[in-house]
Picture 1 (cartoon, rainbow, N blue to C red):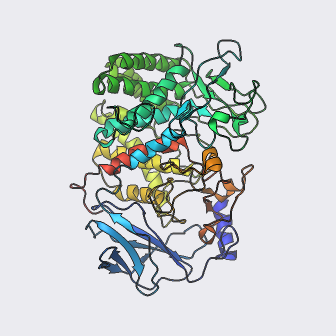
Picture 2: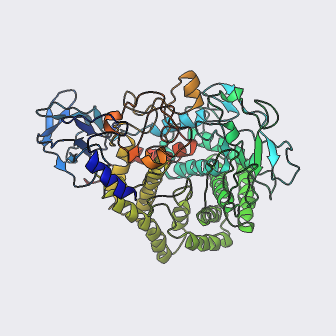
Picture 3: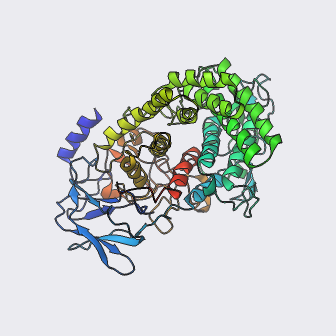
Length: 606
């Protein structure tokens, strides 16, 4: 239905943007990865215009102004989602000389931003992402140097009477709002620990455990992961108890500083907030009920995080006491998941939006695989094999649309965790599960000039970083680099090779085009810019136009290149595309660490 409408719209209004601003007939737009390209990888730019591009473009060394390469861009046959008729690719893969460069049209003088070709283009960007994670801390917040939400929280659906005080302070604020979810917090914690296991040499030590400047002998990624681990321990105060959410959409009262929270959950402003226990049954204090069926998604992911932590703190950090606490928690959390198989969803109060996760076998597979690695107990391996078969290829990847967070966490990390533990025949099976999803995205990527393989549902950037992670882990599993070109195209989109020419991370690259007017209380009230936050990203125009309370606060700076099919706005009023998220940012850390340690000497031109 969307496709037919879109084609009709193109015929009627081929030169107009979503906001009604006409695109210039002779304007040529160049889109590149602003961070840069590694020396021996695929390198390309996108050009688009309403008229044919007939001139050559040159790759010019920024300092010497020497032309290293010139060629005519190659026209793409794929559709570009409207606003423009002509799309071209300019490939300069053969240039492998490190330096700063820009592209320029030989007659029009159209010029790209300056970018790098360098093996070091991505070094330290993972540290920027950890900086944003510290901004999201609840409790003591080192970015703001304040303590917030000290009264979290009062119980609901727990084994004790409702409104009983339980200590669930800590954790991270989920996004621009100040809710806290185990759904996202468990994944963020486990993702950071896995990224450290894969790339331990690539994480620096610049801060202490509180996130304040000053090394403490522990990589910052582990300090941040421990912030999540400590919170999960609080949420799991007994073997059969697990809190899954703190606060709800009563939080959404406009901009407010975390330590001056105006929301009222029945105990006055800036006081106690609701703490929802996981029961595996539908929940909701008012009109909107979740569709929960169990707790395995939360319990399995949290068990995976704890089992990873038990290994790291015992072996890497020589802290057997904390390692033992984590292993005990991993076992009891996993047992909860086995006893109540199914998924727990987020809770809403007065609005219909919630995290509607509906998958759980992948999380139990991940938890079982990590527990087997940590304990060597064969029963965990047997469970992991069972859950792996149940999870199979279930994913958002073959679908053009899905409900919000329906297939969270958007990548089955269990398949990777299990891969090194099984016989070759089942390794092939697990590789096939990953490959099936990748092939679906590859087919979608062939239908647009950017080579983007995700659908533009809410939080499309999370899908993109998850696809990137799956491509990276698939290469780790198989040593097959046949999808290297697809991987680079997904990454390049996130840094500016997209219709809007913007990075999707706040403050990255320094001096570049990136989100500034983000939908967060901290920015809205103070104007403070914190680098490293991944914004939600573009959405289908149909989604954008259907959301409640969404309006732009300023004229659309991307009006000339905007279109009605896929939209993005750098505007505080657009919570659907420009709200940075904690779990999206954490989910990009593996990607950043990978490109900072790319095997340059072994990589060939793609």
